[in-house]
Amino acid sequence: MGCVHSNKTKASEASPRSDQHASAGTRSLKQPASPATPSLPQLSDERLAQQTYFSENEVHALGKLFSELSNSLHKDGLIHKDEFALALFKAQGQSNLFVEKVFDIFDIKRNDVIDFEEFVRALSIFHPSAPLNEKAAFAFRIYDLDCTGSIEPGEVKRFLVALLKDNPAIELSEVELQSIIDETFEEADILRDGKINPEEWQAFVQKNPSIINYMTLPVLRQLTDKYPSFRDIDMM
Image 1 (cartoon, rainbow, N blue to C red):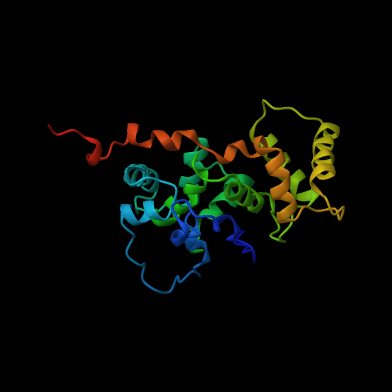
Image 2 (tube, rainbow, N blue to C red; image 1 turned 30 degrees about the vertical axis):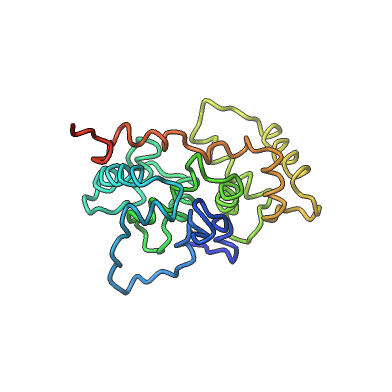
């Protein structure tokens, strides 16, 4: 998909640590891709922790998780789209609209793979400590399938149809599906122009935070349980 919004970094305006770390959650989204140049050295766990919502121990644990994911199929230390889909759905070769969009957002450098720094920065938005406005901005980019800077009814319908296809246990008739879309735009489309802009979306999410519950992964607080850091081990 590879689309880039002019307001793409809006979710990173708030700082998880202090003002000096503004745009911490996804700061590197502002940096243009440089596929023709050698990869820059990865930041230390400490530096990534300072610039995201993860603790240093959580970043260390993420390194172990990343190593597993990035070597599940291609064995090259980078997460490819099929490995990303495998991690999300536990089924090799399975991909969908959600996978495509989320992978595209994670792939900050636009080189069709996700390195560790990209992984940590993007996943930071899903941390329980990340603020709602940043989560909402990330979700906006998922729903804005055509990268127009607004969410339109057709995009929401395409997205919901794709989700229903991958979740056969959930059944919605065409009428029920359209009703959900109509009710959403009735409340969120304040300007009545047939689309939802970023400001309208933020206001809508503030009133209805549960609609983006999927943007918070409580398991991220449990990383150090499964992948303990050497700093947590009592050697005495």
